[in-house]
Figure 1 (cartoon, one colour):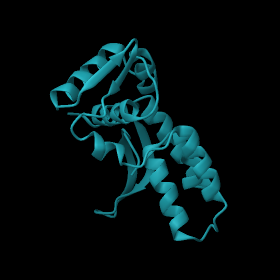
Figure 2 (cartoon, one colour):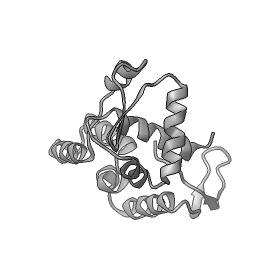
Figure 3 (cartoon, rainbow, N blue to C red):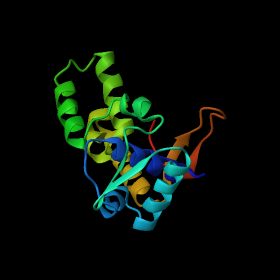
Figure 4 (spheres, rainbow, N blue to C red):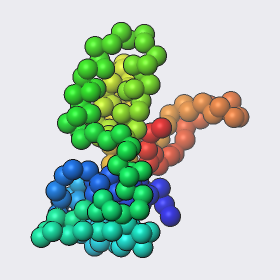
Length: 165
């Protein structure tokens, strides 16, 4: 299974367990995929033992599903909540290690563009934004003068980024 597919399935799982009301088309738009792909992912969840409930056009994972309690206990913020939390974190002293860790955790889960400016500053911000664009467009980028940690060689390197950790 490829990394982008796993990421989309996890994001869908998060959306289906949140207290939101999404149609299949809403979910497809949020994940930038087709309605048919959403149906396939939901079928995979059903095969894994999740109970899928549909009320009208709204699809959700039922709270009686196995694993629901485990998933629902994960920290989840809407993008709006994450943005407010990011703003609050910005008021913490810049040298505070907890601040940096919190920003990185938010960045790894939520919209890259909303949170990108909190993780890096200066010349690296532009590079990060180029990588974000490449991920969204599923494109390759050239890392100029890339310094390999293993070989210590410095050279241009073509990569296809898929996520930040």
